[in-house]
Image 1 (cartoon, rainbow, N blue to C red):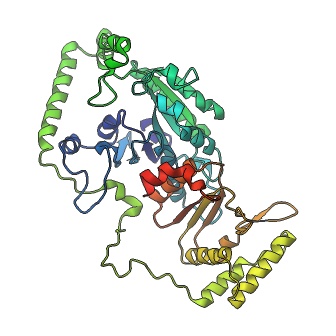
Image 2 (image 1 turned 45 degrees about the horizontal axis):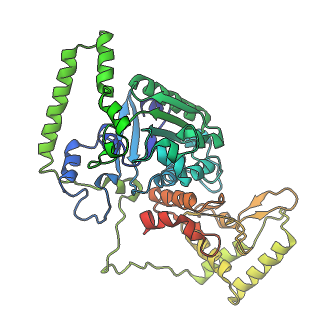
Image 3 (image 1 turned 180 degrees about the vertical axis):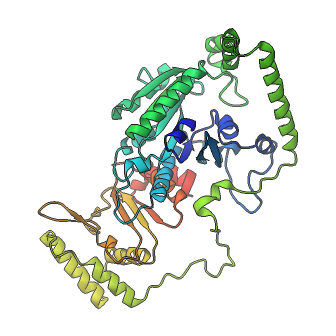
Length: 476
């Protein structure tokens, strides 16, 4: 965060699972310790007027502003379920939307990678999950694609050399958990977690690489899990030799403290005082947690401020969705026009002519034409639309034709981006052949851009099944 801020970084969007999350919340996100203690004692994590449920209290998100050397960087930690790695595409989509906002993107404008680099997606992974979960390979596949690139993600693997109770030789076929990132030739830094200075150095290099080359980069931190998988787990049941070695191994704090003492930078008494002061701080925060009350749900700040959920008494819950006939016909005319020097395929020419006749007469309007008119009316009122899916530009059944191609040179023309100067941007994307990661990405985009209509299109039949985790754990 500090090095990125010095290189022009404005915002970091974090995604991670449970391992190390409390430390990130308190030490990186600056969440008050009293708030964490309050939640662990059964207190509410949100104001009384915010509804929601979850399985693990510290899976919720947070946000804060941190300043280093005069550079302010906004941090946001994305809420996630217990399904490992599924938050990854959500973070990337959220970062993409924030990048568009910072740049102030207009119609069909390509945001320079240097501008996208001002928002960094930073993902913390476990070793077994990074190697085992297919969504990891999917997000790496998304990383260089025009509709989904985010100027590089920093991937940080907390390599505990174990996955719950499963040893590495049973959880992956590759030497390193990071080897999956070789599919996109991402640089990978392996570093010893017992050497804090080396970890910081590797993180700095990774950040500098991303900010310069706008590509994904991986840090694989070799370390260990001193206790069990969770608060009540006993790892000695399944890894007795490993945990015998861990119990006899000095902690990172002890090793680094000994190093600083040997270098004459601190004394043992000073380290003892630091420990005592920190313990006293935590005790005071624990007591303060008794009366702590959250005063805001900070994941609903920013672009969501001023918006509220509808209730049953709200007369405008359904909204006013009708459009004047004159406006619809004006949109229809624009939808069926192409520039004079643009040569469409002759079949597409007939398609546009038939669509024009249907709109003028009001008869024979099919689903695709109705969809185009609906999209046009939304754009006409200044609300952006993002549509992503497999072959969504043309439409699986050759029904949409959102993007027209000049038959001489393959130049593109998008009628929905040529309705008039007052309209918002229409972005339609042929996605990679993935359901889970792409839907997760689009959901993440919608988290940061509530005023846009963000859609993912399942290509055919029951293809939505391939993204079921995203539906179950985020959307529903």
